[in-house]
Image 1 (cartoon, rainbow, N blue to C red):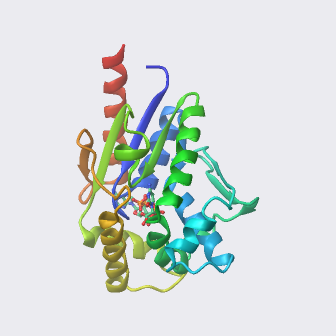
Image 2 (tube, helix red, strand yellow):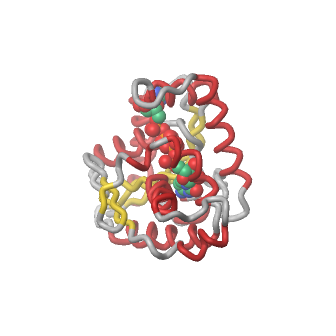
Amino acid sequence: MESVIVAIDGPSGTGKSSTSKAVAAKLGLSYLDTGAQYRAITWWMINNGIDTDDPAAIATASAKPVIVSGTDPAGPTITVDGVDVAGPIRTQEVTSKVSAVSAVAEVRAVITELQRSIALTARQGIVVEGRDIGTTVLPDADLKIFLTASPEARAARRSGELKGKESADLASTKAALIKRDEADSSRRTSPLAKADDAVEVDTTDLTLDQVVECVVTLVEEKRAAAR
Ligand SMILES: Nc1ncnc2c1ncn2[C@@H]1O[C@H](COP(=O)(O)OP(=O)(O)O)[C@@H](O)[C@H]1O
Ligand SMILES: Nc1ccn([C@@H]2O[C@H](COP(=O)(O)OP(=O)(O)O)[C@@H](O)[C@H]2O)c(=O)n1
């Protein structure tokens, strides 16, 4: 197997981004954060005065923003209409609105198309992380991983990140995270779900290094089996 495609899905705070970046760096693969793309289109909607509670208005505007993702795991980038939005897409405002925007079928169609074209052109292969990569975006991925962790562990990880930036206590972080998971899991189009053939890894009691090692081993096993 020359080029390998790895799909990593799961809810917020399970370790998708950190794991995917490290696995891609170790194996010399590209890396794509699809959540950043949904955050970027949400940022654009807010910035352009589109009501994020109006699915029809979102659908009409969905093809307008030009989103470009840089896929080097050592320094992933994201721009919208040429503007670097790596910082602005992480605000609580975007986080609170991204589930509503990403539930709109037209938004998913545009972003899914973009994701498939990026995966197709990654010559060495790619690690793609998100919510519906194994089920919808790349159903033929060579390896599918579904990360889980307890809500307590996920909230603790997230509020650790937010400390010093935007104050958010553990309880409100946990409540916001559970609300977003529910919205992502219950939407009609391409909800957050484990693919039938995904390997589930519970990261609650694992260190990041252990999770990375586990995924790298699974990729190597796939490669050995394909030889
Ligand atoms: N196995 C782990 N144990 C402890 N902390 C972790 C683990 N995996 C990730 N983290 C930390 O948790 C936070 C959220 O991880 P991230 O990779 O952004 O998750 P996701 O992409 O699933 O939302 C980060 O600060 C990261 O360093
Ligand atoms: N493949 C994906 C990835 C993200 N998303 C949406 O984008 C949001 C932000 O994703 P993210 O991966 O940046 O979220 P975190 O887990 O990092 O907080 C999710 O809550 C989903 O609403 C999606 O719908 N499909």
